[in-house]
Length: 396
Image (cartoon, rainbow, N blue to C red):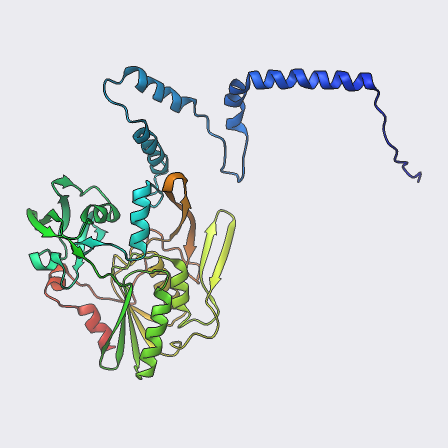
């Protein structure tokens, strides 16, 4: 076979001048007509992943121009832009994907870390299509004035809030300590209005108490330090010789998955506890080795309809590995993961980025986890301080 001989190629000066002239003309024409070319071609050009495509904004500009030309009133352009951002997220039809302004993003971050500031001392959750009070906290304004579990949040300071989600209602209830807030609830089909003075709320993510030979660990949310707190509680319970551990995840709406995984290491040693899938990509997350000090300890997990997200990851993994029995009511069914994307000027996008599955490959999204033993707890029982679910767990 003849060997190819590589050599430098020569170009004469005349050809070079012609080529440069041609590209100069092409460049001028493209630059001069760039807007028209871009509007035509960009919608068909893929950028990044398969779902990323440049948008054709001409239709949006058309609406904007029509408003400017015809609207009879003051136009707040900043508010219009914020509304367009929020509308774009809402148009996905996914209630977990939300655009947040800088203030909303700050409030959301504070709530994740329990920094709720001043409020009235209620835990609320979306149930039966409404935001209801699921419990009031001790020594706080709500309990003092007579707000009860089961009350539907209807108005705050005269503004209707029953169409908002739990996070939206919470934001309305917060304010400076010492300020007054008027809350209207619906109870047994009747409206009741209360005036309360906001107070600083102590909102820990986890706590421990003891009932005979059982340690009861209450986890209200999964904050960045929740896993470490629960590990410390577990060591304390072992040192006291507790024969049973009850994990109370009722009304826990979730939080950081990393904290849930860290906590699961108390029972499950170095094994996969949750699998996340996004499109064709999937990966599992395993617990650390050497922390499973409760692996052989009888464990019961209390759950209800407001046990969601990271709480369901904990309950699902313990159930799949046979490390705990679930007692209570079916969980909420939030089997999706959100990514927080920081945007300009302090705003944020909370966007659903993956679905998660229990170790056995079960998706609970929209379905929830069924308890091993179903025990109901009515609002009337909550308000009377009766807890048949806890009673059943202590009897086991």
